[in-house]
Image 1 (cartoon, helix red, strand yellow):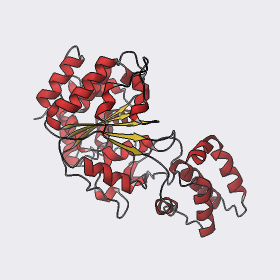
Image 2 (cartoon, one colour):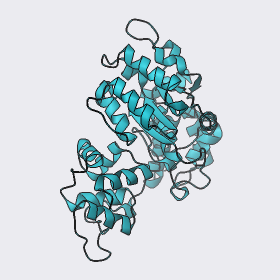
Image 3 (tube, rainbow, N blue to C red):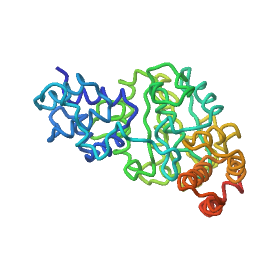
Image 4 (spheres, rainbow, N blue to C red):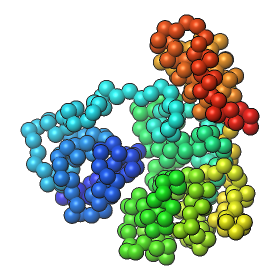
Length: 371
């Protein structure tokens, strides 16, 4: 019988959730989850922890039972293993996604709109080996992080979890993805960053995990096309621990090693050739990024698709006002659509919602000025 660690790794890879998200959802420390995944000795102490994993990973009854047995728990009477509505604060069956998302990045593919042209350009590049490297350049709040989450999730998201007509067949199955958020301070230390990448790829983690051993592990174990998504690269470059030698190593991996099966995508506020290290020299890593795409406003038809997703339809005049005031920037569209929806739900029939909505846009006027 497979170990608990083996089963959990399999189910996590199959799902569209990463380790950090899963740990948060099942209410355990991330390092605890990593121990369960990598160590055949470490097991959950409570049955409910296993059941929460089973629920958020969408396991069927047989898979849930197998996971419980592997964790050392006896099975209850038939049909009871997945009865966890009393465990979760909100039953997943009654959970509804917010129609408009303000503030945090969008992580659920069915909530993501637009960018069809850019998605086609990027996935066309990644259809072939050697994998080529891509930079996404955009202003703050232009949607870079949401775009990265969508790239890594959409391929493996079942059609029934998407909006009607939403495409998920951009690439053939078999790609694997690692999302690195350099705003997470742990990602700005070389050893913890390299360990994280290896764990996400389900590869051996050497002790110590230095650049040389990391490159050797990838050379030996990397078998399938792999994309590493580097969000907010400027924060990584600012880290003293991620020095020039580190970036030379990343450049070498992306150019001469891994059999062309390793690709990088980064996000930044400016083009790669404009990003400088402390000594005012461009990072050698950026020399391999031959594709640079700018993340601007939505096309009008994309903006209308988002607006028309409202559970309460907007009048045409309201939709046109939202498009004009937002400049079709997705973050501003979300704010204005949310304001209009709340007003409709509260039976407000005047234009107070517009005044309040414009007030909420003030911190983001720079988007309209530069869009």
